[in-house]
Image (cartoon, rainbow, N blue to C red; front, side):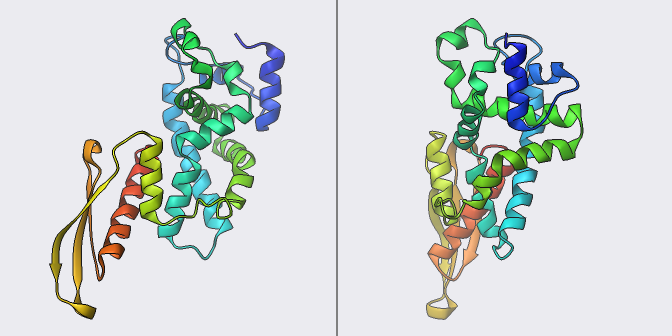
Length: 230
């Protein structure tokens, strides 16, 4: 179990002192350790994170359209980025894990770290209110949001979608032309983007194949974000 001074140091790092310390402990508890674990908190925390980061991007980049903001958010809240933030907070040392997870390196597993971080956001919200949880997200992600474009995260939707799926070790999307009509300025391309095992197909029509594929990828990114899969 994490020592009192370690938990206090963690509270200082995130900028929130818990009134109900049990909420924090539950957020740090993996299902392999106890029946009272962090999965329900992670469910809530994922939504808090997505909203807070979306709002920060909206404020930081007032001229970017939604089609550019969605890939940025997806990049910022993807599992690997959350795991990096959790490592910066030294969360791995605080996690309560079962013996099997400990032996297999669970303290460094990206999925466990990312889920625990999201659970912490929910724990803060329940301990205080939504504004307090949003404030924690802002503290942890402010620099990342400001540097988003400079770090190369502002990519076209097709590239962003491919990188997200690669990072999750999922099959790459398959694009296909379902119909092509007209020529020149009157050309129209009906394109589908198939995510395969995820069971989703997105469709778009545009005056070029590339534009239609980018629109399909944009829809896919928005769906992934809504499902907590980005």
